[in-house]
Structures are given as C-alpha cells and as structure tokens.
Amino acid sequence: MAGGTDEEFREYVVARGPALLRAAHRLTGHPSDAEDLLQAALVKTYLAWDRIQDRTALDCYVRRAMVNINISWWRRRKLEEYPSGELPEPVVAGAQHLPERVEQALDRLPTRMRTAVVLRYYEDMTEPEIAKALGISVGTVKSTVSRGMAKLRGDLTSEPRHLEPQI
Image 1 (cartoon, helix red, strand yellow):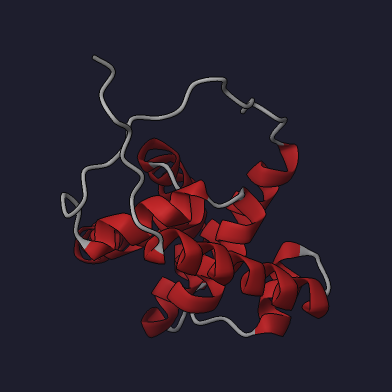
Image 2 (cartoon, one colour):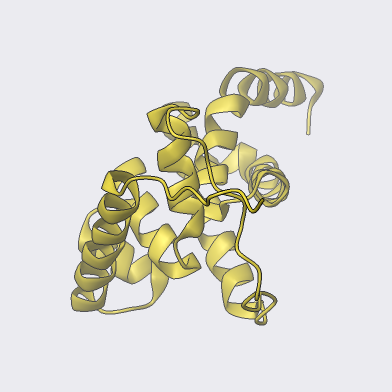
C-alpha cells in the first residue's frame, strides 16, 4: 500500500478502535479474546482497504468481519469449560453499577446465546441477518434471543446472594 493509504488506515484505527474493541468484547465476552478478534478483523480490513470505496461503511465492514471471524472461531472451539464444585465469591449489594452487572450477566450466557443477544441489541441486526450470520434458522434466533433476555432479566432482577460467614 502507498504511504498515504497506510496513514489513512492508521487514522481510522486510532479514531474508531475503542468503539470497535467494545463491540468485539461484547461478541467474545473476554478482553483478550476481543483484542485478538479486533486485530484479525483489522488485518482483513487492511488487506481490503483499496477495494473499500465507501469509507463511511468501514465500521460495518469491520464489524461484519468480527462477526464472521468470531463465528469461525466459535465453531472450531472445543469444550474448554467444565463445571466447578466451588461457588464463586458473592457480590456485595450495591457494589456494582448497572452497566457492570449487565456486562457480567452477558458474560455468563452461553456463547451462542450471548452472540445472538449482542448482534440483536448491540449491533441492531435483524433476526434474518443473525440467522444467516450464525447459520441457524430464524426461529432458533428468536428463541435463543428470548431465552437469553429472560436469563439476563432474571440475573439482573434477582437479589444478590449473600453467604453467611462461617464462625
């Protein structure tokens, strides 16, 4: 690429990187995975930079690349999480703000459910678009998003559990 194009790409990444990283984090649920995902999407964008004529559509291009890459990684990933016999430490009531609680509740959703909810409500994709992106039926998208939202509501409206100290 020409030097001017490199500079244009660098300026785009500097300006839009934080917002794109937040979107990647919502898709993956983990900060380091989000960084990897955004990096892979930006590499694809850089390689296609000369072919992207509508510079106003760059965010859409990068987000679509992130969704596609994430789906590809998700399909290849083997089960790496196993149930634990230990309960996590309880959260002190009022210690967290709502955005943090929402983020943590999203992180607890299964991967496909979290992805469907994020695509629907954070990326504002339609159900047919989500179905196509995830390779599932529209009905499955509807039920997955509905179950995910029900879990989020339950998670956010339930009172935090406090364990009594053992004396």
